[in-house]
Amino acid sequence: MKRNDRGDVKYRKENFNYFLFGLIAIAIILAIYSIISFFRYRFHVEVDEFVVEMGVFSRKKIIIPFDRIQSVNFKQNLVHQIFNVVGLEIDTAGTSKKEFDFDALSMSKSEALRDYIFQNKESDDLIKEESEVEDKVQKPAKLLMQLSFGDLIKIGVTQNHFRSFALVLLFALGALDQLEDIGIEVDKYEEVAEENLLRLGAIFMAILAVFVLVFFIIVSTVVTVLRFFDLRFLRIKNGFKLEHGLFNRNEISVMDNKMQALKWSDNLLRKVLKLFTVQINLASSVVVQKKTAIVIPGAKKSDINSIKSYYFSENYANIDELYGADKYYLIRRITIILSIFLILSGILIGYDVEFVWNFIFILALIFGYFIATSFLKYGKLKYGINEEIIQINSGIFGNRYAVYPIYKLQGVSIRQSPAQLRKGLANLVIYSSSGVDTIRYIDRKGSTT
Image (cartoon, rainbow, N blue to C red; front, side):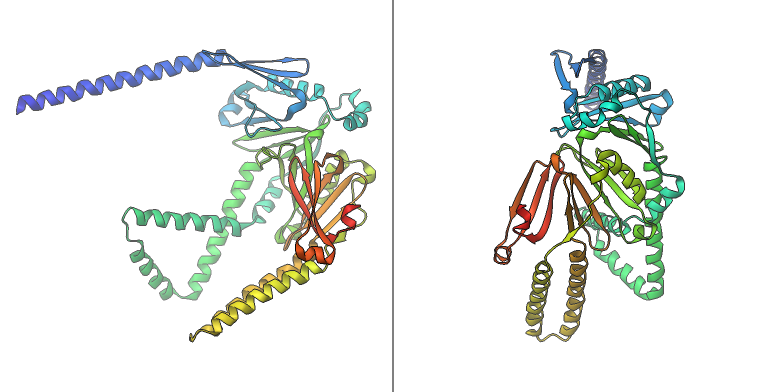
């Protein structure tokens, strides 16, 4: 028995050594492959094209015309900042991933490459005509706005903390389900927690709610400060550049002709401070995300007007007259809400339940909320149009604004429900490379002019 035990130990030890040697060999092979891949990864510029060559066993060549380039982005983590290098990303319209992604490139080379692309990039005929005089003289970047530490504190405090709380609550519920799956009796602890909470009373619950709210405000504020630290928004030649971040420094540069829509919004708290969240949508409907679009978390109305003055012509940067949705939108919405409430109330009354009227009262509060928000939403549904832009306003408690250059719209469609058809109304749907937007319940004849 002892010999067999010793033999088994020796056999397992030999197998472990083979396994360890195998891992080391694989690691060496992968390291050599990575080194060769690094030295065979090359890029260069040919007139108006960006050329990337890569591959170890088989070579791959990617040619990116400057006209397809949507944005040039720099990213710097702490290691990048120490060695003064950047992660360089080039986005192109029509793809869901980065066309070119270089992990570490010197800052000087990255800036020279970006400037060369932007200076030689072909623009739309309209932009060319507007910038002929400006192109003759190379102008330095102009600072349009900058967020101070105090501004970031205001932005963090006025974020949507209810949404953050909902996300954490969903995560906690999911975690409880996972605990039940591995055999932990969650129900037993829930009963103990409920008994203790009832014993502590309503005052403690109110204090706990305030503590949770303050916690979320602090977390949101810290995240905002770290993410958007020293945010600078600049006007560069035929485009804009956004810089922000403390530990991870990000820089996004986009050209005017790749910008599809200018949007800004507020909420109840930011309305008091007169701050807006600004987003500039880019050309590709696939790539447009918050991390690739230009997003400014806090801007004043004067900052928005400054952006519009560069992007749109002076005569058409603003809409003179706005039109609202037809009142039938509100009537139909309230009619549907009341009908559902009456049906549910009738069903509840049919049951001989002691607390049926309490349920009906709760339903009345819920549907009353929907009716109140319907009035708010109806009052903010506006649209306006001139020779250059179309503007769409919406919102409930806050306000949302979207401005689209007409010449960049890809299509327009008219949609009518049976109810709208009887009333001569329609929804006007506009399509751009950055997505879809809708003007609701307008006159059918007016939507075709």
